[in-house]
Length: 306
Image 1: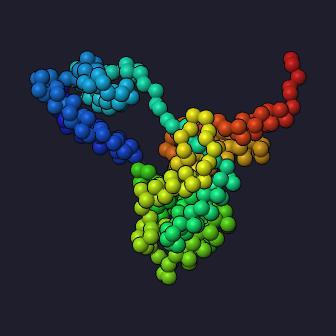
Image 2: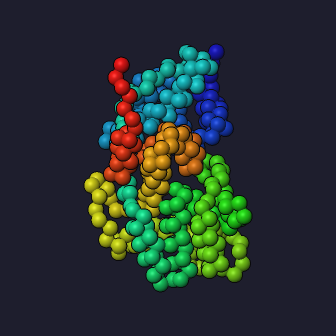
Image 3: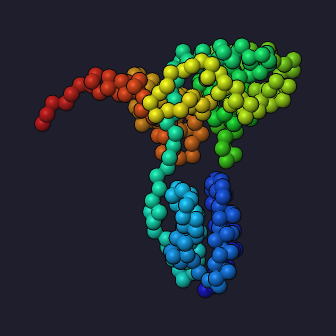
């Protein structure tokens, strides 16, 4: 059986995208790999070919080399199911690389309030209201910044206190809101426009809030507040408010005696994670979280030894 590698690659990518995978960079990486095979007259995928492609630029970061190999590994597995002679199975871990993630700055509730107050002092009244509302919304919902910016007023169901969110990869979810959050959002809408329609968060000129502008203003606010340095952390980012929400939720679960694993599962849905394991990245250890865990363990009655 002969396999058309380009047709197999197209089918492989289409099938994965149909299952919800975004597959950024996969198309051009696979095309480049197949171009290399054709130039050398090769008609099958080997481990050696895949490794050579992944390590084409030795000076590149190990994580990037590992990603290149991972992309070809998935293609090889698909082709192998069609004809084992057309592709060798590529073992995992041939290029080990650990994911590098920034340590989030976990700000306090008082610091969130301070940032919102400082935002209210911005020279443009409309932008001041929008940045202040954005900070508060991210802090109490854990939304991604892009998700918040993409919201329309129609996404807010005032009567049922719900927010419909369009998340990553086109996935939608509905979030319950506290009545105080609903009031803050409705007050903001009435304050910033005459007609309650269009984008929920707006910029200085009345169009949808630009997140590049929002991040720039937020960085300036953080600098003006002179927040204390945290070990291993850079300055507070808007995205760190998402981490703060996740950690605060788990602290609350421990203090209320709720099943922490069940809370993490619910939190994964609330944050819009397709894989619950991704949620654990947000549960960065903090003194408050460790104290809540310690208090819960200490309060649990010890079982008598058998």
